[in-house]
View 1 (cartoon, one colour):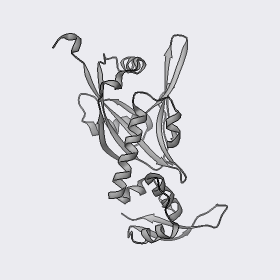
View 2: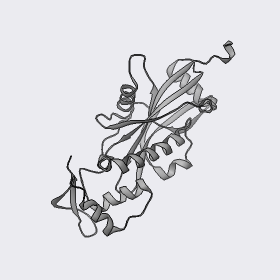
View 3: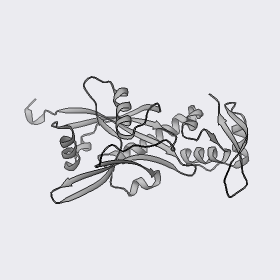
Length: 233
């Protein structure tokens, strides 16, 4: 093979971090600032990084989340890899990556993870040039995104929708420690892109032995306070 056709491949991890604010499903994105001559270019990207030589993929994903957001001990699941040559079609992305890593990048393959967290956990920003913030999932299509990260987010949503059909308890990774049935139904419907009948959903939840009613009601709400529940592992 000639040198012209020899790539210098690198492997990265990218994390699709989902949260839920009781009304909408959110995704955690990094604001990326690229300085170009006399101006700056801004877009959004997933928390991610090229893996280090001495770490495996799971370790890399955990490191990325901790370094960029300060998050630890969260649900993290590998769901797909993305390696098409079109990933590097934008020169700005490659130039930014080369400047960041001080490596020559010919082609980049990324392994994607889904993370589920309670949105009230504090998010840290470690750099003046990057900041981590929550964004409504429905707004992603309107944003300028790095690489193919918009597609990775959509695939991540498909993955958690499938996983939650098999493992409904994953819903509770996103809910607060104490929640209402209405919050649970809203999250379920948002993930599955459906609209559940209230009574039928209550019957469904009644069959889940791991959803336990508490002798507590909501506080400080402008409507009739609803009973609170908790998830019992």
